[in-house]
Image (cartoon, rainbow, N blue to C red):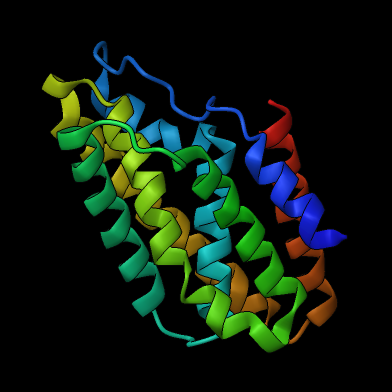
Length: 181
């Protein structure tokens, strides 16, 4: 039943995650977007936490950041892709599941760069063609910082499985808010 509900939620995800029109101040828009887009904020923090809980290195955050920028390039060059919004929501569900099901944590954490590709793809689609590089510099910088903040939080959560589950529940609640918005 849980799998059916999850699938239904993924299928009804609204394409409301992109925020087009970053011409006026692309650097500021790029710097603020990861902080104001709840889906991006939660995915980045969740990935950082998972990196600290699993490999305890910055390899996962670096792969995630690289995949996000690669996705932005793809979105900039090729435009939108079918399923982009569902993959963005899926990233929150996978990160939450990784925190709530520790036996699958490493496997699920390794999927995060794939999901980050679609987050970046949305960034590339929403960036104005003339402002892409400046907008991208902003969102990559803040995304990297959020991954580090998540990693630091994950280091603090290592010994507190109850708080790990609470964070996972928060990711699920955030996914519900994104779907509702």
